[in-house]
Length: 554
Image (cartoon, rainbow, N blue to C red; front, side):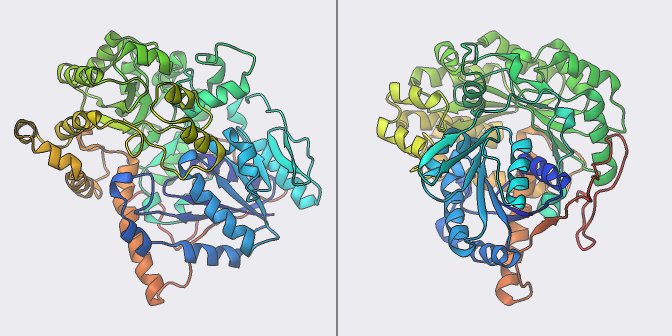
């Protein structure tokens, strides 16, 4: 079977794992990618006019028709649900014979409303490798087993059927190495750095996070779903080190991002990794952590294995709001984590959510004062996104942050993607605090002091002039990927890729207009031969390559 994924804006590890599983089962996979240059998650760079000019929708749909897939798959988030629906509608019209399958967070939490749109034939809920393979095998054989775990569908187009979820796989080493080439084949934006994950799940069930909804689904009879280590499943250190050796010898990335929700959550694992890692595996990386698990031991382990930057989720300095969110850490723990990272010379970003239910101006005064005493490299301001399925949805209604009507729209798939408290639901009292913090992030101390003292920071914030110095910093560093630039320059693989994404796809846009390029690029991964398995990790075996593409990080 030919399975085509259509995705947008960023690299997706989940699709790479699904592709690897399907190919091992003998199916061909392909990817069409919509960069959404000025119409995506990066709201500060969006522009309706530019988005129209830079749209690849026509070419993507034409290439899809030419490829004639048997199955078209979408990974659906609440934030991109409308984008997925618009493409699914086109698939339904242009390829009526194709089967349309959805998975991902929003598809898992709003399954029935999505199916009742008539745009999707099947939804695979939760972790999907095994269930998706069984579904595609059944489609290839002409008869789908309707008892496949995790599967949901409308029986005879009317009765909603939702099969039980398979318990989480504890042995995550059994999954094939993800198909990185699914994105690498698309060109230079995906040759920058590398992404891996060393464990699945998170010990925390924060109410604003997708893990919150998944926990309630996978552990419906437990009242400790807000905190349980059962959700966390680590790969063996052998397996993780072998993948790093393979990655380093094959792609030679200069920067790495470890996508674990909390890299310090499994301290014994981290200790073993630090004791065993050599230069053959060590790549400078950025990771994510939670203050509770950053201590004198874990911070040294991180330093040993090459950690260059940490993104640490603080979210709120109001203890009652933290308790509501499911973050029982104390202010002292947050301060200690900041101070430890700075002492070890590891770059530190702290995430602070604005627009939380129950937030007051006094809370924001405290935020501003706290970070002047305990100074990270960057205080990243995120405005709360309210996702279907998570507890934050009802918490926001109860606090009056959003109306019940809005909550119903988010749950029911009428959501348009505008789910942020910044754009629709929050009082303006928070914005000056966010602007002052961003002024300190972006400008040097003297200039920041001047802008704040004179009140000019309000103009910078209101017209989002922060984007210009940030863009300059990214452009300045984009061709110097031998190391992470200073954390103050807000660096990440995503930031490194974004200017390349714009440059690469705008050039492609011109080539398509002038006829120099005839069609939208598409990655295609052939099925593995019958009985063939992925080479054992630990053995360095180059992946199949398209000779016209330069694959090394550049």
